[in-house]
Structures are given as C-alpha cells and as structure tokens.
Image 1 (tube, rainbow, N blue to C red):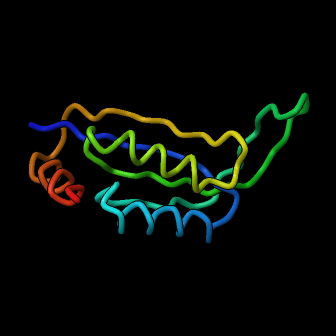
Image 2: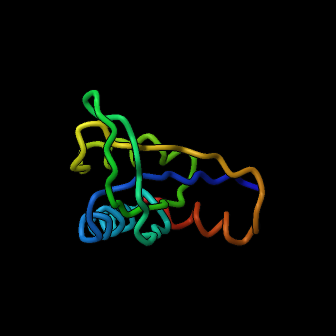
Length: 106
C-alpha cells in the first residue's frame, strides 16, 4: 500500500481556512482538505500567553507533494510563524490512498 501524508495547520478565520483548502486542492497539492470547527488555542507569543479561536485545516496528500504543499501553506498563511505539521499515514484503506495519489498528480 502506498503511504499518504496529512498536513495540518490552523488559521484565525473560517474564510482564510476555506481559501487555503480550495487553493491546495485546485493546485493538486492535496487530494482533499477538511476545514474543522473552531478550536481555542493557548500559546506563548512575544513573551505572553495568548488564547485565540482558530480553525484547523487538514490536507491529505501524497508524500512527494508534501514539500510543495508546505511551501504553499507557508507563503499563503497570514501568521508570522504558522503551524504546519506533517504526519505520515502508514496504513488505511488502499482504495483511498490510491485515490489520494491519483488526485495529486499535476
């Protein structure tokens, strides 16, 4: 079975999340992007603890498309230091992983 990768980020508005998701899928950087509901994040920023409401975006992609997807997210992201996490998925539905690979071919 081919592996896939899940790339995760969070942004400060639903509209930004929707734009990131749509652009990645349209550009075949991801086969699928899911915008999750609101989540409250607490973190250190500039020597203070902050809490912000954010929206998560999960991108499903082929491992060879990860570098281009990460570059796209970093360039399009509104944060100075965006969270971009990559997780490799070692097992799952083989039909789904094949579909992910097919859909991420330019």
